[in-house]
Image (tube, rainbow, N blue to C red; front, side, top):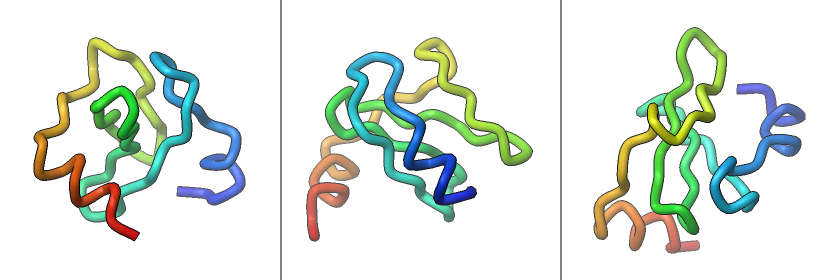
Length: 64
């Protein structure tokens, strides 16, 4: 994922920042508690395509 592109993208639900998880190919919005897929290098920022984050994933994402 291009870091310049990541700086421009925001969560479509909360308009907050997204964090890229390389291992799962997802953009994570902690504030919305959603993970958006990245397919073939293209972010799919549709709420209907996102999966809900677990409480454990939320806590892990908040660690520095």
